[in-house]
Amino acid sequence: MAQDNREEWNGVLCIDKPQAFTSFDIIAKLRGILHIRRLGHAGTLDPMATGVLPILVGRATRACDILPDQDKTYLASFQLGLTSDTQDIWGNVSGQEGRPVVSRQAVEAVLPRFRGRIQQLPPMYSAVQVGGQRLYDLARQGVEVERSPRPVEIHRLELLSFSEDTQSGSLEISCSKGTYIRTICHDIGAALGCGAVVTALRRTRASGFSIQDCVTLDQLQKAAGQIEESLLFPLGRAFESLPAIWLDPHRARMFLNGVQLDLKRLRCPQSEGDVRVMGGGVFLGVAQADRQRGILHTKKILAARQAAPALTKGQ
Image (cartoon, rainbow, N blue to C red; front, side, top):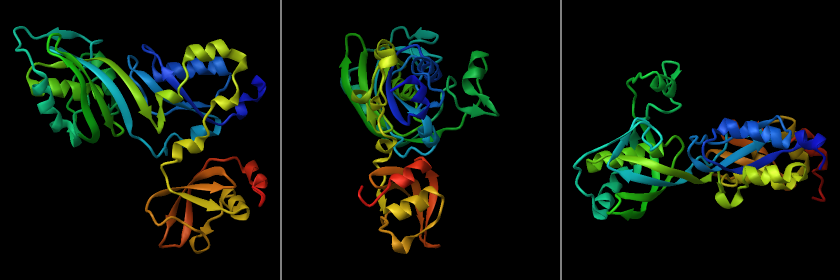
């Protein structure tokens, strides 16, 4: 497809983010490679972290705030016996002299404390705002402020490897949005009485996409003008975790024109919460069943209105 038409592209491009790039750096790079202005990312990654960074392209950027699958999975390497102001190896690191050797059994024994719903204190080097200021801006000025713990959920926390000789290991962590992996490792180190820092962090899953779905910046740069829209995943892929409601061509056009639909005339899932609206095999948007009023309440239309005439009985 000609580059002139790339501004019409719509979907999700999954990038395997390299180390030392911010998520905004990746957006800037992609604008230069793809020559597309409307780009956004889902799920910020720390600069030194690598892995899955879903990039929303075109109209898909309108879905940034309503993506249903906010859980993420990480592989985190850690080193015991060290502490850091950033809770990772890239900050100001200090060691603890004369510390006892920690066994694998001891590490395993503290992990249950960090599974399930837990309270987590955001680190100073984070994008959390306190008093209208980002914590990392205050931290760079040498200022530490009081923070309130926040609830997060750790769905899975497993010790994949641990060396008693080097006092280092790796964890696989599946968690809810807003979880700081650096803080989990820091808190594990604190529970063991020896400190711990993250030495490598890789996200393997985000917004329903995995590493296998990703391309690298190098691959895109080498392909340059040969990149096709087929490289993008349909936006609907990111909403597959939601129950679906299927509309006939007439009601699909009504939905795309913002008309409220009568629930009595629809086969609407009985589950609570959001539903993905489909018409003619096309993902149209997200809605919610307002059962008190008996209407399908539109949350966000994500397909172009031009799609409506194509929704014929033959599809």
